[in-house]
Image 1 (tube, rainbow, N blue to C red):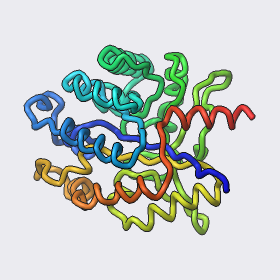
Image 2: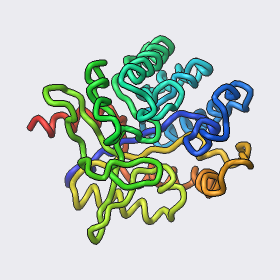
Image 3: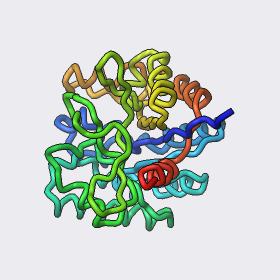
Image 4: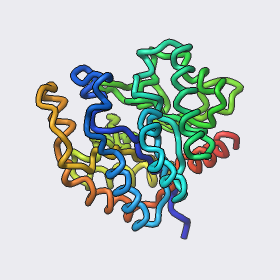
Length: 286
């Protein structure tokens, strides 16, 4: 019997007030005055992963790592990959190439100095590498990143690059950089998000199980999943002055998330994103 495909397990480490949904109602200048809950939530995630016997990748904001260095060292010491999520969740299309390079260098330097672990992977905040940033992959390649997981090949009101490949590809000719897009599933000619986050939290578990199984079985490709530490924190502060649609997306079904994650970790095989990148590089080379 063939071994199951190893899917990519990832956590986007940012706190409840740093999400794109609240970027217009919570000023960055106020962040240090707010309740930083990311450490207790990451510790709960580490316990979930340990119970399931899995390792994953923690795409972490440099801003968070700088303020919670002991947490970062615990994550690394337990065998998980530390990767970059940029410095302070600025979407890539709000930067120019020079600003993006500076953001990358600042975040990577902080993560590496704290953990002693080489940072070779990157995920753009809100999957914000798209048609507006044709220079972004080149900047990542020049900086020596092995892989990026920054593209969502779907149509979405906040992000999306519908024309991008669904599975891993080399975005820069002659460079080793691999882009691993967030997972999508296709049904009846339509493409849907299937990589985690709000899709996983808001919809019934059966939908995500079907989608990942379809990618593994029908497409014969590994899937990836991602979620955020704040998604397992039902008691987080409420931002009452945020738009109703943002509040609905952000706060719905937080209490169900931990149980759904336990099922997901049990039902499929999971591993770090750098291991997935290595496997995909071998596939592309073959």
